[in-house]
Length: 311
Figure 1 (cartoon, rainbow, N blue to C red):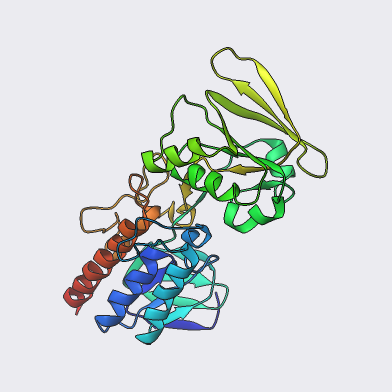
Figure 2: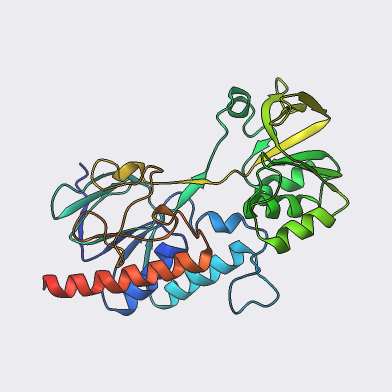
């Protein structure tokens, strides 16, 4: 264990909408919390090309820009944001131990807001060609495929947003969806269906990605008749099949559901006293920026009450 040990009233693990909002509320409550920003400051929403449903932005706003405003708001409150990665935790007993690549934090109260990560298909070719045509972020990588044909795998809001964004650069965008209708919101579904650059391949799954050094095509299997077809000339494939909660660090200490989400009560307390969770790491249902921010605010309020009772 590091010699650099800090004792804190409140440690917030995660720097996305839930964690940063918890930081704002905790700072305003006089708790002087430390927000451990983790590997993706601002959270996965920073990769979203446009957020159209966050109140107060009638023209929409890029995910990165929205989260920069939240970070600036916390900075203006002189909130503490530390750009460190959590390596391990010990939640057996208080004080709880949070060990990062920069030191060790001891605290009686924790808010876990580690979010979720893109779910993968599990194909060998997906892993081998990751970063060489296989991507999980159209905003990050879409411009590399200007004038080329690409495919998006998925049928929810993320897949529809990715497909719509990719039409800015790409000649053609295939959407490969295993069902016969989209799971995403109607306004997004209508938008991509009307786009002449988009072709939807229904009732189908991606079976293999072709290419040795880069993506050169796809093999798709129809779920109805089991027939396979090859999509030639596809240079990129964007996987958008949902997310999995970043809860692995806490598996030995907290109750998780069958999908790995941290289980909380109505006040965002986990199965361990003094440990709260908020946002995508505990929310299998909504997964929206605004609900994550709201959960972060609520968790901070409850953490503040908990700390008051400790004193």
